[in-house]
Image 1 (cartoon, rainbow, N blue to C red):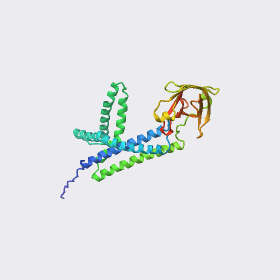
Image 2: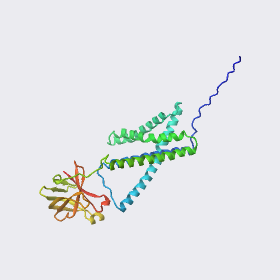
Image 3: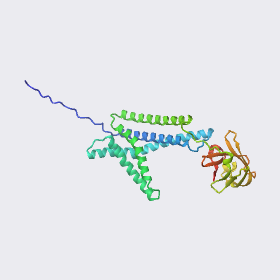
Image 4: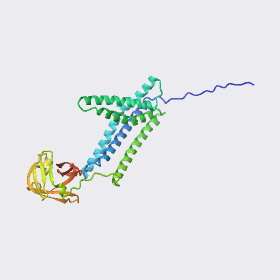
Length: 318
């Protein structure tokens, strides 16, 4: 019986299409979008975390216009930072990974990309940390930069890596759009979720301290040496307190000084929140002092000019 030997031909695995021209543009844009999304997410987390600390929001048309302009500027800056960061960090890391893999004759795996990210982050940490430490800034900068650079690079580099293994220019730019939508969605979800957590009381937002009349008694001081002493019998003594009149606030003039004796009482503001009513020698008539700071480190303040400016004159309890 004749036996026929048939040689099985195995097709060699095809590697990813060589990236060039528009492909590298897609890699660059994908890295930029990923970095911008990371920056947006970091800003959202920073904003949400800041709601636990002392903060004040301005209201009114001018304030809302200011918020809108700040949002537009932030978006533009995130985009520019992403484009520059992708060109300065993401593309070099992708190129470093490809070049080092070929030089060593190994496959360009995800671990290889992570190693390239680590090498780039280490170089950035040394370049930033060593000069800072030599100038007296401390050596803690080096590990902080190392961790921040590595964690910031990895998502963007892995997204860029995904572009290099896709075939076709359309698919590559399509992935750029997917990264953009996913980053925007993630930031929106975190923002809405954080606001919902504050709204439901799951996370406690900052609340001014509840200062009783007994807690108000004592000496309060500003940063220029001015003091206000509140006594238990309702009398008050002021020494070099600053009086910011409307003319001084908007005209840039130096504030007036107020020294003398008078009276004080804990009362409610027109909005219903507690405040300190103080009258000292006629120079602080009609000024409602709000409560700020924390229960452990309370403060008294009044707004200088329009509250929308968020400019305050503050006293801290000694």
